[in-house]
Amino acid sequence: MDIKERQKRILEIINTKKTVTNKELLHLLFISEATLRRDLTELDQKGLIERTHGGASMIESSNMESSILIRSQKNVKEKKVIAQRCLDFIKNNDAIFIDSSSTVGYMLPLLSNLKDLTFITNGINNALVLSNSLLKFSLHITPGVYNANTSSVLGIDTIDYIKNYHCNISIFSCGGISEYGITEANHEQSTIKREMLKRSKIHILLADHTKFNKIFMSQTCDFDQIDILITDQMPTKEYITLLEQNDCQLVIA
Image 1: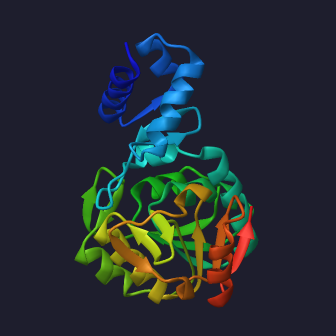
Image 2 (image 1 turned 180 degrees about the vertical axis):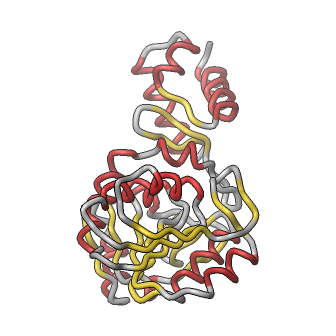
């Protein structure tokens, strides 16, 4: 199998499985680790796939949101570190908007030492995480149309419900961070997050380093609407300048 045929086969496997480990690819292709590493690097540089820890995944289009299953398996170590650092900004009796993101989901079980927290969320998976925790909390789940791909509820009923509340904090993640601000693949998700931001005092964005330099279809907010950005690696000078200009606190977990 020559390089072109081999890389075509790799793309076929990744497009079918959406996300795949190096071990699976080695088993299916009968090639060496060095050859696979070179192929994945080349495909990643061409923008045809996205490298993940120990594997690769299909590139997300600018208007297609990846499933909660895929997102929850990506960059787990980085997300857990970011989630741990977010605890510094939460205290007893806080009322908190949380989205359906997997990064926020990793934070929720860590809040067990706090009391009398109130959560409002459109994330079914994150609501389940809370229900299985030892946390003393009040939970409000928004109504709306269930989206199985992201384990969340969306729609006008969701937005109308959020308008009934005001919280201390909004904690959310995103699809991408670029010079244009914070974006999502799904317009409804962006709209819900914007409503949460409007109705909270402190806005905390949790985003690992892979979110930088990505632009998706729907604008969630600009940098001046974020109070705290928690990430796992120091971003480039351009982003540091943007954050400073917009009085956004950068926290490296």
